[in-house]
Length: 186
Length: 243
Image (cartoon, rainbow over all chains, first blue to last red):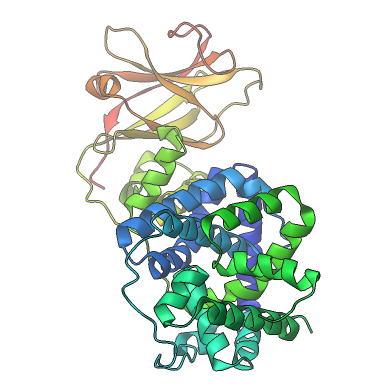
């Protein structure tokens, strides 16, 4: 499994580098291979399919325009592209910042955040490592970090939704991040 | 709050940026830093490597087909190169055998098919509106085959055995209606597979009484809108069998 993932990743790196040279066929191939993943991210963060489509479209236009800035030594192509699409999604969320904060995420009553079965079976090395490190965190830290990552919410919004003071939310996330870094980089 | 040293504080900003918890202004500030400062870019990339694997747990979702065409529209790609789907036509072995092109041409065309069909895999119903032409060079050898799809308003020009032309000349394809003036279809790559769009004026003239012709022109094509160089190949247009 991890071997094929690696081959796929290298292939994606090469495709994205060709996109950097404005190779249209490589771009079409890259789109074919990566758009289901990126659209999944858009849908998770934006919920509204129409908005998710718009963000996906903007993201691929940027991938085409900024492909030349991709440095494979820094991060893999998929990481680069998912980061780009998440940035677009977060920017979009900030544009309508005073949206309804209607769904609280009730930090204490949330169902336990075990990885989904798909992830357990299919995910590769880096995800497993991250998951192990997340499991070492305090439950509030872990849940807040996950919720922050997938919602794209600000500290303020997260605190509001979890009905905890802003300082508490910041503290959970910051301590959690520092601990994660220690775990991941050692 | 805990006390962090400066290094942690700085590093946290990048982590918070990647996580997505910063407000719009702070995000914009970090984004600028990433562009201007290599260390910031490296720190952000490190946090991306750490956190982005979380998206591995999300289900994939195939985007609707129109997203791809909107992307190519935003990029203002010329229509001739848009990977619009044409599965049935190019994949039809029967058509290619009928045209009589060699295996290597077929292989090249299949590559194009793969590239052109993957983004929007919905098969199209093929109306019987396909015409073909074998464009024969002055030496008697077929240089290219052209397949015209009236319903999709496009022509696919595939290299068969083209003569080698000097690099400082462009090959330009013309449609010449019976008794009429040549109409440019466009400049094409002589050794490649080309997908060219057909304008309404071209479509209205396509038919068995018209011919296709290739002339050698200055780089980029004829400056006058009419052939200026020698005509090196031409071919009759005929209907294709049902594909």
